[in-house]
Length: 432
Ligand code: S3P
Image (cartoon, rainbow, N blue to C red; front, top):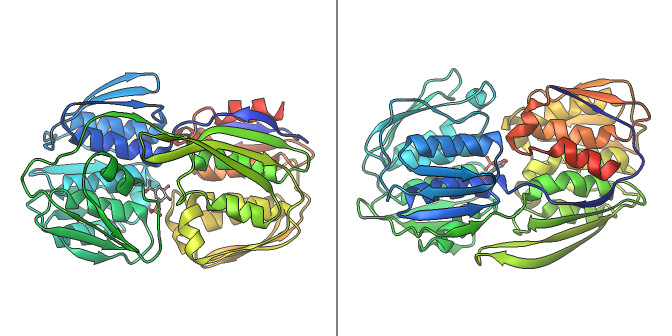
């Protein structure tokens, strides 16, 4: 699919973005593991999360879907073996977290994915899960999927993560539920903590001491995960497109309602405020006492460049393409560093952002662990961009493309459906 972005000089209105992707994946998996029936409201019905739902269904959970409401009857801790491959599509979160759960099951399973997922590094999860006792073959060319995983009796480990990754942390903690003794993960930097929040909310004791997170496993005993009713907050990473679009546009005003405001996800707000944006957050409820939800009101301004690095990076890892977009429109240099993890996302996001920015006439210098964008730039019209099959690249470039004075075509945009079905409609509504 191709989308054409028309020039526009205002963005105004109120929008509610779809449910959080990270939380939807985790709820699907943990409700499938719990005993009894759970209801998930505002589940993200995007391709990524539907792939996870199909996978847990194949593993024995009963899943009923009524629009964005999902009812899951869990397996009581024991998945049913399946000989069919579990197709995780484009989703690194789906594949890596499910491996954590399968590591503690007494059978073999195969996980496959699309071309992008099959090129992403999986040794980062197979190494710790093998140390815990699982047997994992990475049958792809570069230590990647297809993955054949054979679960076994696991024992706890203390593992220092070589990279800041919530996916790897979560895979180990999920395997830790089945292990004998304590499983400890030590992070180099704080990463998103939805797994930890959900463990607590579902009744699993978890100890967090600075960068160390530990749980005691249930080693063959039943895992006391409580089923329940869950409300998924709007995805901050989807709200981020409108936050950035409005922040960069003098005179704009956009309100995004019912967004997840977990503090480990919202660093984009701090960055844009440093650049001069006028952004207010109004927290208004806590979904089942676990994840904060609120409204975000953004008023546009002229921005100036900033530096984004260090501990801030994991907190806005998925929003860094948007920081580059804001940098292209801001005055001065915007420097992104310590972000080499961007090279192993759905695409190499340092390269794919730089290629597209250059096509739009933006001054950008690619670095091994980030980039330097110098602005403000006049955005070239009449060009064709490529998402390279990466949803966040497609949507970030759509935000920048509105600043050209002639239409811009973005190719390869089917991928938007992996995280934000309805993006184009929301774009049209807000820019009308
Ligand atoms: C995610 C963690 C991040 C993020 C991804 C979702 C998660 O990946 O980029 O989109 O749900 O845990 P890493 O943990 O690999 O950095």
